Amino acid sequence: DVQLVESGGGSVQAGGSLRLSCVASGFTFSNYYMSWVRQAPGGDCELVSSITRGGKKDYAESVKGRFTISQDNAENTVYLQMNTLEPEDTAVYYCAAEMYYWGQGTQVTVS
Image 1 (tube, rainbow, N blue to C red):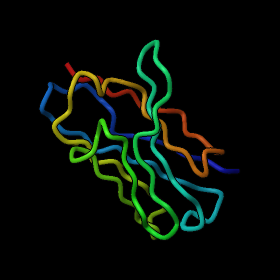
Image 2: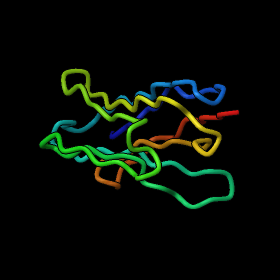
Image 3: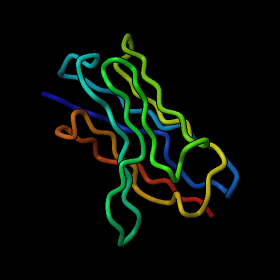
């Protein structure tokens, strides 16, 4: 079975940092386009960042320069390093593979 398990969320003060992790299993990780998507309370989903099979990285304008996506194919893990967090970053963050398989989400709260 395909599984994506996120971790690393939490509560931080503005200006702080968090690193989210998403461990994948049940598929050939390196063959998939991986993304981080967030949903703020009462808000729409926002594509935060993605990384292609070739390693090309994209970011939402709202997080450029603050967030960094990376992946470790040997560990089947994709990361999202989030620096200089702002209250507007408060959301549930989801990991997705090909926008088809989804994790359960991890809460990030910035005060």
